[in-house]
Amino acid sequence: MSIRYRLCVRAAQLALSGLLLLHAGCASLISNAASGFADHLSAAVTNQNDPETVRDGAPAYMLLLDSLLEGDPGDPALLAAAANLYASYGAVFADDPNRSARLTERARHYAEKALCISYARSCEWNGATYEAYEVTLAHLKHKHGEAVYAYGVAWLAYIRAHSDDWNALARLPHLEALLNRYIEIGDAAKASTVYTYLGILATLRPPALGGEPEKGKQYFERAIELSNGTDLSAKVEYARGYARALYERE
Image 1 (tube, rainbow, N blue to C red):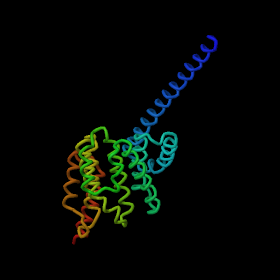
Image 2: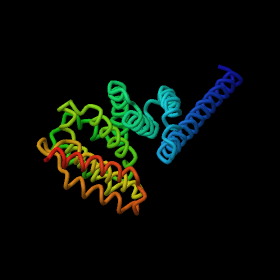
Image 3: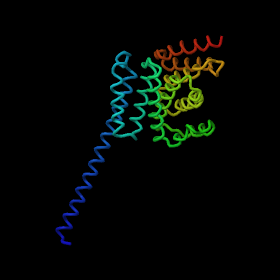
Image 4: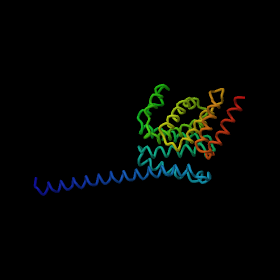
């Protein structure tokens, strides 16, 4: 084998290695950019003060997130963002119950996958006993916060859209424990919202079927306190959920 041939082979190997590194670098940049876009999109939707703008515009972005996930199905940040958007839209804007059920089902799928990738112990949650599930919550850390939040939002939306499904309702204690754990490890800025979700959980069922209106009241009041009274959704859900629970109790 000639020296010239060996040099050519070596040059080709180096060129191929360079291309692979360039591809990997570009893929990483694209993934990071997409994840950042997804995070900003979720924040923009949440902070939008015109619900009709969200109703009209969100479906296009839901499809965009779907397309990004087709290219990178294992990105937990993208999955969490998609879960949040599908859950919010399905719970708030989908007037047709069947459509709400479909959208929140997709949200749950995305959220479960996001958390499974971020925290492997969660992959077994659906088949675990409550005791085994509770043990795994103690190992959740701050780095899992975004995936945990998306999981909680998606499951809450799913349960509300499937309120006639006893298997879904059976997950309420699991979800309450998870959201309380999020308050310990997650973003303090979201604590008010999470307490609102906990209030919804506590008042979702009538007292005769396990609903806890007084606990719900405490959660709602804590949400309002943490937001200095600026969280209107907490006040709306408080009035709706707590009043309904009291009516059903009487």
